[in-house]
Length: 269
Length: 311
Image 1 (spheres, chains in turn green, yellow):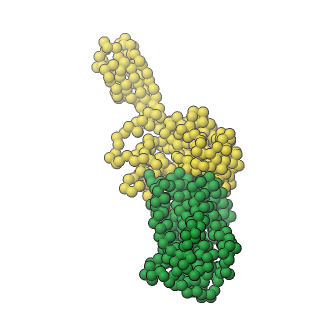
Image 2 (cartoon, one colour):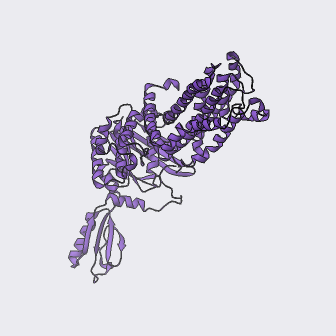
Image 3 (cartoon, rainbow over the protein chains, first blue to last red):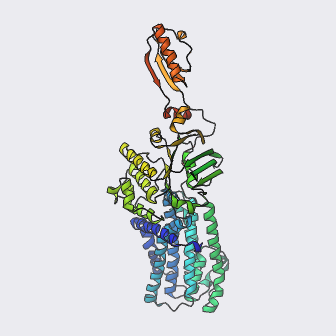
């Protein structure tokens, strides 16, 4: 597939993404969700003392939480709304009679949200480093890869979720299961409450929630702390990354499968 | 290879409802072929398969010698499609919409040129949501011709247009045909088909029931002769005329005949010889409308009615 990422492919995705940026800017609800909601959420949670129980550096906690909420709101929720809106407006069907490939249509529509989410994470990391002081992360590569994979996973989950979302209004409800579950994973993955105070049974279940491996890997990369509460260095962090990475890859595979099986390009007749 | 579009025994099902039931036709290079039919006849369902939007559940489709579904990447740069409904984001302007589309094409015309072709040059900065239905139709046509396609698929291109815009659209389609394009269109305007089509097919309940040139399709229908007899002349005094009596409301009689001249001669000679004055005498050759209505009023099969818009 990457061999087919030709100049034509880039040009087509860029044309579609440009139009999607315009639409995002003109949609106030989506703009609020994309620009303000993750930051506000993290600000509120921090101000009521979330994360203070843990012995993690506050800067790392803020970045991890923001990455989580950016993935949930900006990538997942926003894209469920965008894909459903384009489907119901028959835009997806129209795009499919042109030269765009199916993957390019999904990517072009997602690109603005992805850029906004990633920019927020980067910006937050920079601001946190300045304000709270961020120690040199033990394995920044793992953190970056986790966010990239997290973006891919939530784009796929968003596309799959359109299958049970009949219209844009319903997206507010149909996205709740994933949103709630994933917020649970933020709470139980050692960011909000100390890892050693989370019951093993809960932790065993929570590690399979889609957002958990992303949070675990970002945390591991930024602080070296494993989900069990141990702290490791650069070398050992790769070994610790294997299990969350496997779960993440599994979710991506599930996303691809669900997309192929259930994604609809036009409204129900 | 002369045939640009080949459709043979194509079927398309939605669940256990079969919307297209074995359709066969072909369109030669430079030709305009029209698919006529009532709502729900299967025109759009057929067209979507030819456009490569869906795989047929049976039969074979070739566009420019290739499978439009499997070889999408090869076929799409050479075709232009106008769907039945636009599918434009409401918040983009006319130019933004066309520019986006142009950005996805291999060799597009300049956007301004395409908008000018459909008389939208004065509406470039208007958001799509503020366009009238007819203007949206024309924007759709602009996008269809933006890539300078060899083959154009137009699904009800003039529905919702005012008479002047319809004429302009026909003019544009003729220009494209003159430049060598091949066009497959659906319509339920019979004058549109008479105006533009080299050949046409009338679909009914998922099948093609008549096909050929306008003259050939019309030839399958009888001419109509109608007149009224004076009250003093009883019916049974009429001679044996070649034709079938279809209306007899006690006053006016209407006959269908495949040999209008013979029927008229028999009738008129008899009237002269017997001194009968025929009132309201008229003789009409068959029309496309008549051929169409004959098909449309044929009995329904037991299948439930379904909207034509693809599921």
